[in-house]
Length: 470
Image (cartoon, rainbow, N blue to C red):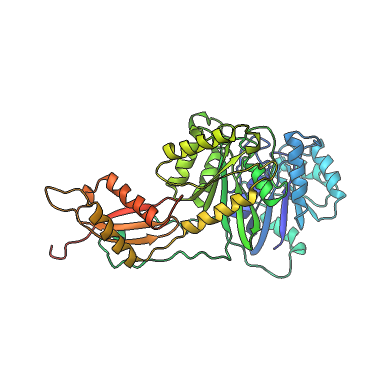
């Protein structure tokens, strides 16, 4: 598929145009410059043409190890993947010395360059910028407005000579909501419910979100997995802002790895950019299949870690904990004991949550972490046949009957698994409103133990059977 990279200095509208081509708000947009730091990619279209688009960080004249210098390195790495470049300048500000500097650099490159003067809502005001843009030596400039969608046909015609002859089908979106299954009211009273298996399609990428507090090593872990400096890293907290998706292969399986922004306590999130970054991270959790929660071995499972883990569990995702910076721990036995204690006491609703000690910086135990993630994914997809489940239900009820209601039994009539991802069961009882929460936990713990379902959420939905004589 034809790949177009959007470049330019900070705050010229690259992310706004990226979202327009993608047809959805994927990149965070704000009036302040320098919001985008890592390059991100997506499939999109311009009229009848499918294209692959790359949104890059604002070009800065920095060559050191500062954030701006690392942003420039990321942009240069992204340009190597492009078939053509759309160089954007700000029509309101006109041509700046930084625009002239990078135009000179682009003229020396081998890839095709199209010049766009953005923010051209006011035709009279943009005429001066258009005249100045001719002096950049990049051909005839195009007047566009990424915000309002004007000038898109000019971009289309400018790109037409570079399009690939054959059209390729657009790839599936990074995430979709099709796997969510929350509407189960229609199951009430239906003991003949037919389970619809959610097949694991090996042709589709397995979606893994990497989440955690700021500065615990999420981006470093993604780079260690793909063995490339794909996203920016550094000692500063909060470098990552957008959720960056990266395609990757492991053990002959396609993966979609998503690096997310660090999530601080809600009360501390005041800045609008950080708030949008956290919302992006929450969306990544909701639409992932596996979530790797990265924690710092020097501060094991702090309150914010536990809140993130609780959110992952509530979303029903397959959770794996990566204990990063393990090589910096002197007393490992004490750290092991602290981790086990907090898992048992603070996340007791799920037994045996899988975890792995790693060093993302040194690349240690990365494959072990991925193997644990795949094992958890298999359990998350587990399917149990209904006949065996109902024999099991009779056994557990005989061993420990549900509490009596006014001296009468509250019969457990029928159980079936109605969904995987996570394993979800529906049970029909005489009086569901009188079934205590403790007894529901007894059923769930029994399922977890007898059917070997460790480390993943289990959902139990209690329903009432309709009286055929009513």
